[in-house]
Length: 207
Image (cartoon, rainbow, N blue to C red; front, top):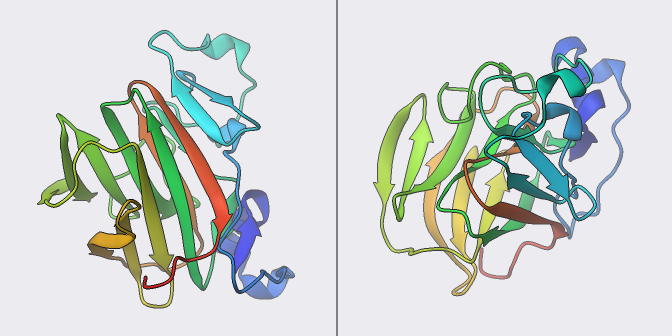
């Protein structure tokens, strides 16, 4: 089940009984765009808010609307739709980026933090031509996948799992055991290049 980002914030604070929940096509995963109001000032969205690019200088913070949902210290952006149940699959095309993080986070993650730093986000990171998992600022290496052009993420909410998928082989490379306690949202961070998201996809056969 997926919820628009704004409504999911209310859900996490006030509980499911306070809000209606829209039905989602069981064959397809969450469909989302990136939420501009969460994007750090060094990030710019493109292609209908499905892609994000990094700019070393970025936008002048004074030219951005004041927003408590915007990440203030780290180059992070969240998706606009949260997940509260089900199995969901999306892909990320990597363009000229050698340092990025992809995963999910609690909808109310601190905007002064970075995904992977605390225990309320679960991410896969690519840096220095190597993959790692990252949780609560602890990294662990991942083997069996090289420099990416496109990767997939499989979120299994009830099973409390997030998996990195090699799309060329349609195979799970590594699975993180999670600890979801409420709505979570796709999350991205990068320090060069571009990431382009592809959501609303069916879970591939065999996963």
